[in-house]
Amino acid sequence: MRNVVFVAPFPGMTSTHRFAKALASLPGTRLLGVVQQPLHGSAGRIFDDVERVGSCLDARQVLEACEALRRRHGPIHRITGILEELQVQLAMVRRHYGMPGGDVEAAQRFRDKGEMKDALRKVGIPCAAHARLRSAADAWAFVERVGYPIILKPPAGAGCRATYQVNDAKELVQALLESRPSPQQEVLAEEFLSGREYSFETICTQGEPRFYSISRYLPGPLEVTRNPWMQWVCLLPRQVDGPAFDGVRDVGFAAVKRLGMHSGMTHMEWFRRPDGRVAVGEIAMRPPGAQFVSLMSYAYDHDMYRAWARAAVDDAFDGPVTRNWAVSIAYLRGQGQGRVAVIDGVKRAQAEVGSLVVEAKLPTVGAPRSSSYEGDGYVILRHPDTDTVIAATKRLIETVRVLYR
Image (cartoon, rainbow, N blue to C red; front, side, top):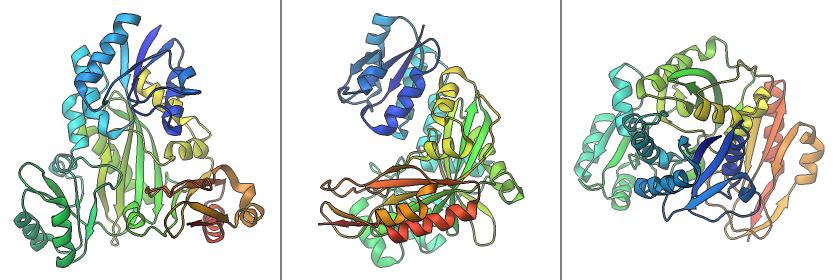
């Protein structure tokens, strides 16, 4: 029996539950957990044993928890987790055990977006211009070099948190007051990439990309974060293997190899500039969030949660797979503040596009408004024809309205 440790601070989350279930489904696997919150309901039936810690971000606490699990169950085969903030700590614990799965230096290159861009640029992979800010003077010097707009964010940020789009001098002054760059608290400044925004996912085994997927953001997450009234949509067009995406395939595969990916899934955000050139925004050494793994599963008729687990635990990929469908997701949110009061237009949307819906989670009346760009619910649509999915998704977000009070 192989002991696999899944470090999952919040095991009750739906996405965490899906990844844990995938790990537990692998033959001959005993699933052990390192968690911060206690297990409830179905999560308690997936894990065979857990150790609870104060913080999964503390590598020492994670190692001590793994040692307690090892004493009870024997040698540990693999240690894994899906959160970006955990990847360096997981690599440190794996190093302690001499375990494969990606080294500390590779995890750090993926985690620190400035270091990541330095590594990519050295081998000619196009990405946004950037600089580390240790003072306000550094910020003004960067603007002098690249112009507006720029992006300010933490070097090891994730999911647009604490990220500012700065369009002029007035906004830069305010962003500097809030971010306060210093030698002790660096801030990453980046050139603002314009154009169409996409993602590029891979599954790798022992450093070799074995699978890729491409998604289109409509609009980009940062724009959605800055405009709370926008409905965010992600589209997986059915055709991604033609010449239109040749450039990003080359860039994406080169990036994961250069940064040192071992086995598992990566998530890269990239731009198609107005002149057609590809530019990398950033890349993470973990599966994408925001239901993207479900979207890929629907597009390929293949369980991509289990595909991630196979790569992370067995260094294997059960392919090839075929992209049979176009898929989209609409994240439901509306205008106003407070709690969800009304979800309008659901019956009309069901009548018009319901035949394409494969999964949905409607906002819960009475729940506080979510602060995430993923909104308070979502609807996933699927059809063999990409244009049909685009038209149905447009109709959905025009019809369903979420109101808060």
